[in-house]
Image 1 (spheres, rainbow, N blue to C red):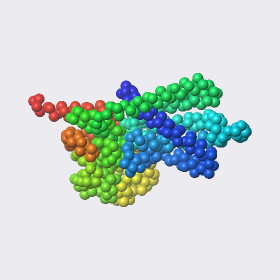
Image 2 (cartoon, helix red, strand yellow):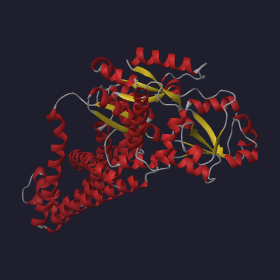
Image 3 (cartoon, rainbow, N blue to C red):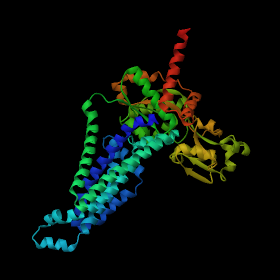
Image 4 (cartoon, rainbow, N blue to C red):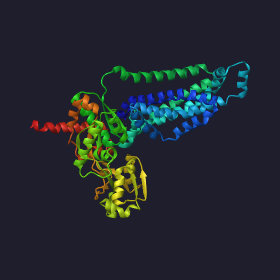
Length: 514
């Protein structure tokens, strides 16, 4: 618990920054547009309709689509900016709708009286309609506040620090303490901000000036804190830390910690981890220079980035082709292979595999129509799945997409019969799963490759030298054991990384000690 609480200031600050700034921009945009709608009636349908359409887009999809859009504009494509824009868009509808509703609900007799005493339309709006509509408008802000706090937890896959870091990493590593801390902190923050907006609402409605002043003062303090924490890194100046990215599963967290420690120890440069990125988000980030280092897999790059429909002839061919393509197309350096392959694999309970006498994917074919399969979020849309279907003509009774951390539990409990496992996942052994042999070679090799951005190559060649010391240092058994320590033993990925490096250093110094 203490390890998780030590991360709370950073994650909570990031969450507060995103939430309050998104609310500020949503209010700034929505209220003027809402007022304009009440003055030009034909605007109501297209404006509210557009805001409604935005609201129907799944929040994670809206945040993710910001990455390529911003990259195409040459802007920061991961991290704070895409999350801020996505959250602002999500906050528009309730404020906009309540602004229109509040102003249109003002008693027509009061409007007529205002005109009767000679008020212009602008004076009528400023002195009568907006003051009377304010409690309704603030009610919309209150709704937007709670929504924004909740949706901000989904900012993690696009590289923004938030309380979602707890939730995404906790789910993947089965660290339910982290999930609990993140969820509880988000709930408390939502209650706090909702309570403050409610005080503003009550102060306006009941004309309680003291209550209104106190609530506004509290918001001013929160915004001052956000401004200071956002400005602090800019005021410090200096070179940007070496940013190490990781995707959203256990192995990536461990490898990011290992690479960060190696870079710090061998170069003295500061490092910063950007965790739980989506697969394509991570690659786009290094291609655009938003992160500097991360580990990707030759098969993923072959199928997703190079878009090769057929598997390579060999592991060596895959690495050579990928290395040359990334260097010439994106300026990305493939430092080398860490020494293990983590390939996609079909796995099922050992007991069921023995009962059906299944050891290869080919032997699965006659039974597939009676079985269900679970896979991670992207597997069924990947080229590897298309290749498997083409070569084996597999057709399952049901195909279920689920969180990678939950699909192992699902197959162990019999909720699904087959899963798209990762070959170095320690849970394969812990849960007595059988990995089916890809006897027709449908799945490409997945060697773990260290990638470095153009910025690292040009400005920090010493980082490449430090990273090269990790080439061919981790075999599949070692990686599987480290994954198991996190997933089953509950150890922190940083602790597992430190132990690996300490053991490696001890082994390297052993001959000289004799």
